[in-house]
Length: 202
Image (cartoon, rainbow, N blue to C red):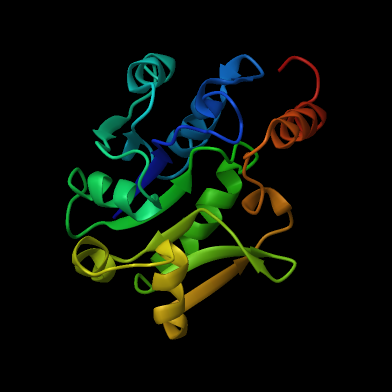
């Protein structure tokens, strides 16, 4: 089994506002990300890690079948949020780590990663586009203790590099797996692309 974990605790200082709550079509950005996961083969098995403006984010995704974890140190790194989320995830479940600011990732990409992991449920699975590794990524439960109790300077990249022989790359045909939204220009470009790809009515 695989549980989705959405990292959405940060303050978004470079954006200048909480990017999770920015409008994205008729949804908020975080709602778009979460909806993609809940419409994938993950189904209702999704946990969202919150920090800044947690109540507003909860309200934003209140209609979706997700659970919530809270990071009391949202200024911490990605690993601190993953550790908070693991408390809500069964020890025998693999973990699909998704970034809360990657709204262009599709359900098809998520399902492709899941299919590869289920083919051989071990190690790590992550997408690659044009030779560059992206997110979301799937981690087998074998890494749970290491994430929880060992230092990981450099975050998931450090974990990935430490176990390079266990990494499986899934080629995808879009750079959506590389695009996260740090600045206002990133957001505006992602929204433009999404509108073009979605067509009228969205």
